[in-house]
Amino acid sequence: MPQTMHWSHLYSDVRPNDTEAKTPNTDTLRTSFMRDYDRIIFSSAFRRLQNKTQVFPLPGPAFVHNRLTHSLEVASVGRTLGKAVGKAIAEKNEAETPAFKEFYTYELASVISAACLAHDIGNPPFGHSGEDAIRHYFTSLDADTKKHLQDSMTANQWADFTHFEGNSNAFRILTHNFNEVSSPYNITQTTLAAIVKYPATSEMGFDKTTGLISTKKSGFFDSEQETWKSIAKQLGLFPVDAAETIYVRHPFVFLTEAADDICYRIIDMEDAHRLGIVSYEQIIALFLPFFDNEEAYHTRDKVMHKLDQIIDPNQKIQYLRAVWIGRMIELSKAAFLENESLLLAGQLQQSLLKVLPEQYQPLLQKIDDFSYAQIYNQKNVVEIEIAGFNVIGKLLDLFVSALLEPKNAKSDKVLQLISPQFPIDKDQGSLYRNLQSITDYISGMTDLFAIDLYRKITGITIKEL
Image (cartoon, rainbow, N blue to C red; front, side, top):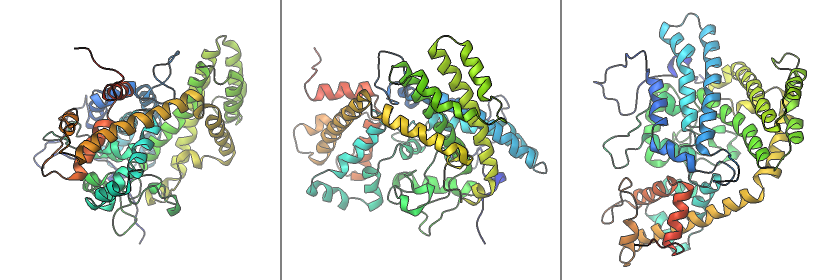
């Protein structure tokens, strides 16, 4: 009999560090899911996103989005999308319990907004090129070093480095104790599951030949695999392979992903306009066709009438951004509800934006093609990506070499630079755990901190005493 998930089992306010003696949260002012949001937004890991590149270099001549402002905006969109979908689920399931109706009517919005807030919290400095730089360093090691490392850990543990993924790192940050007694986050299993876009191990992920959306990338490192399994069991998420290395997505993940997909398409364009890379006319041509449907709340005529009344081109783009996001929330909600049976069966293998009505697919593709050609390959963007490779590569080489050459006079001093939050056991420690501590330290850096440390260790900048 085919397995399926159930709306009534897909949420829980249980937290990974909870004990059996833990009493339920009865605070009606700050519910458990609201607390998830608060714990994330007040964390230092989230605060550091203010100096991590989204697309364009920081700081720039004009204000553009960084990882923090992007995450806040995604959380705003996710909250509205979660509210719309949750309300529809509650209304459709009138026979369910009051707790069920309470969660979907009011709490799902908090879950999705918290998940959106944390979706980039594991990203290293320098945008997605930071992830590529970490992968490249480990895959490009000389043969002897690579063999030594591979012989010291399992294939899946080695894949955590050669297939380093920001989504997996976000799950690690939010669940791992590091050098503390327990995780400082301890957010609910529901919110954690709503963050994991690709619930597969590093070894089984990054495989598009499976046709599974879960293996497009990866969602948890070897060190957090058992934590993920516990969450999956609690919420009724089932594996799709006998080895339990690939799982079905939690349906809420599709909402988190949709909010991100909506935001970066229009916000990257808005930043490019402010920087003079793309024109107002080019953006209008790309986004106006989404309002051609007469059933839409905002039709093309209404949008054009409002745009004609606005003088400042930047204000025009801001208005277009607002109504386009509203239009996409409307379409994404409909797509989610129309695919309910596939979602619960774990059989929807595309993102929500990929299953919007057919007439919108070429429009979205046109935006993606334009962004790739005119924005993501823009000189300043490529320069920061190259800088990321050089800086992260050099830092990894410094710390990994010190770890592997403990008798070198410089090694002990180099390892002292690593924060005690990321312990290095130089005597009997696991090489896998020690390499994770190095990667944790570097991936948590801001762009400026990484550059400053790079300059110091290479002698470019020497601090005066």
